[in-house]
Every structure is written in C-alpha cells, then in structure tokens.
Image 1: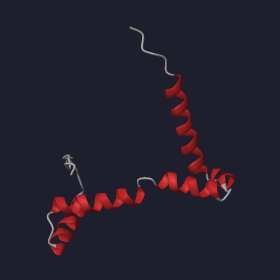
Image 2: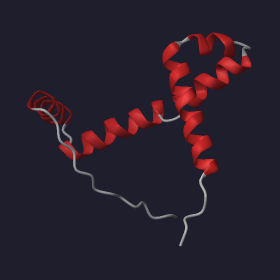
Image 3: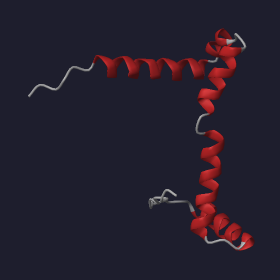
Image 4: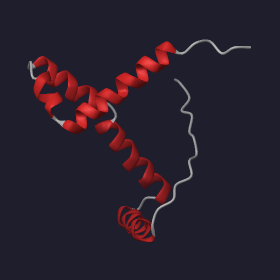
Length: 95
C-alpha cells in the first residue's frame, strides 16, 4: 500500500469566510483542517479537468467554432497557445 504524503499550506481568509468555516466544522463535528481539506478535495475532483472536458465535449459535437465565438474562451486559448509557442521557442541559456 502506498504512503499518503501530506503537504501543509498556509491559507488566509477574510473574517466572514473564516467564521462560516468554523460554524460548518462545528456543525459537522469535523476539525477545521479536515473540513477545508474535504472542501478543497471535492472542488478539485469536480473542476480540475473541467477545461479539458468542455473542449472534448465541444470537439466531439463539432461545435469548436461556437466555442471560439466566446470571447473569454478565445482569449484564454490564444494566451495558452502563445505561452506554448514561446516555451517551445526558448533557446538554451547561454553560459
């Protein structure tokens, strides 16, 4: 069985959200750390590959042209492509 490696992170919240989390942790009988880890884990499970799933769905339905009509997605995709091209064009550092 593989060992689970845990990492600590520092998180800052405004007072309102911190109080909400505290109330939720008490209501569910969980420590604050466990609740935050659970919420974050659920969000990552549901959203980590959302962009890829949307692109796959649009491509499989032949709707890529509609996807690029969305200015936000068009800008995002253009930015990603620009980064990929620049990364691919990087020359080895001169020594």
